[in-house]
Amino acid sequence: MIAEAILPKIKPGAMVKVFEKVKEGDKERLSQFSGLVLARKHGSETGASFTVRSTIAGVSVEKVYPIHSPVIEKVEVLSAPKKVHRSKLYYVRELSRKQTRQKIGTVK
Image (cartoon, rainbow, N blue to C red; front, side, top):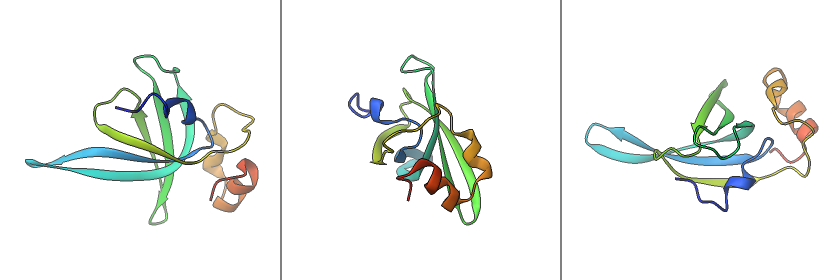
């Protein structure tokens, strides 16, 4: 479950690190996924979610996380841009990493 203080900081353009519980057999471990938040949908209601995009081994990967999921252990906000002019950053899918940094500002 995500802390209430973190929820307003998860917004498009923010770099986040999501820690999720992964069950392998009878063991459970934490898995990290860090990347850029592309979208936040449905505010903070029951079905709310956010989309995180990252490049892993040269392949772009997007994951959609429900905000109220018990699988999410915690979310760390690494950086947030001063101002993003759109609520959904889907146009970033066609841009290179350098172009994304120039458009958004604080993404490293």
